[in-house]
Length: 276
Image 1 (cartoon, helix red, strand yellow):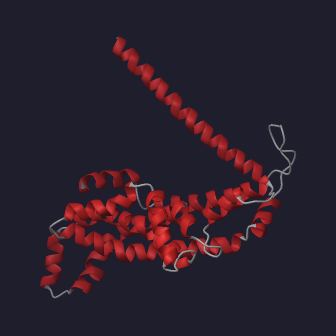
Image 2 (cartoon, helix red, strand yellow):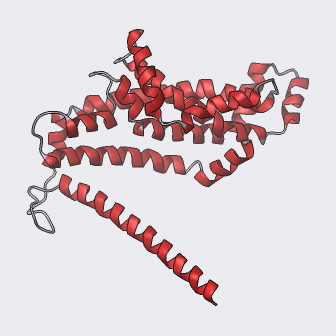
Image 3 (cartoon, one colour):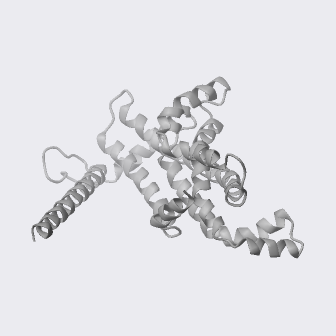
C-alpha cells in the first residue's frame, strides 16, 4: 500500500513538473509573439494596441530578405552534399566488414556526441587560415562536419533492412553498381533518405555555434543574424527583434512539421540502438 502511494506521489510530481515546464514554454513563446505585434507594452497584462509594422521594420532593418536567401542557400547546399556523401558512406558501413570498422563508426559519432563549440573553434581557425572563413563555402563545410555523420547514423538501419539477396539478384541480371544503386536501392531507400535529409535541413537551420564561428557579413544565416540583432551595439526596438525571432521560429517549425511527416523520432532512436 505504501509502495503504491509512493508511486502515485512520484507520478503526480512528475506530471506536475512536466506540466510546469510546458506551461512556461508556452508562456515564453506567447510573450514573444504578443510582443512582436505590440505597439507599446509596459506593466500591463496586454499591450496597449496591436500592429504588424514591426515585421516590416525588422525586414528592412535586419535585411531579412538577404538573410533568408543566404540561409536557404547554405541549408540546401548542406542537405545536398550531406546526402551525396552520407548515403554511399552509410551503404559501405552497412554492407562491408573491414578492420577497424567500430573505430570508424565511433569517429563518425564523435561530432554528434561532442559539443560543437569544442571542435568549432579549431576548425574555424583552419578555415580562416585557408581563406574559407567568412565565406559561404566555409559555412557549408563547417555544417557538413556534424550532418554527414548524422545522415550515416540514420541511413545505416534503413540499408540493413534491405535483403542482400535483392542486390545479388539484380547483379545476376546484369546490373552494374551505378544501375543497382539508382534503379534498385534508391527507390527502396527513398523514405529513409528523405527523412535523413529533412532532419539535416532542420538541424542546419538551427545550427548556431559552427555557423557563428565561420560566417562573415555576407554569409550569416537567420539564427546568427538574430544573435547579432540582440547583442550588437545600438538601440533597437524590442518588438522588432521579437518579430525577427517569430520569423525564425516559424521557418524552423514549418520544416520540422514537414520532417515529422516522413519520420518518427522514436523509430530513429530504436534503429540507432540496433546499430550499436
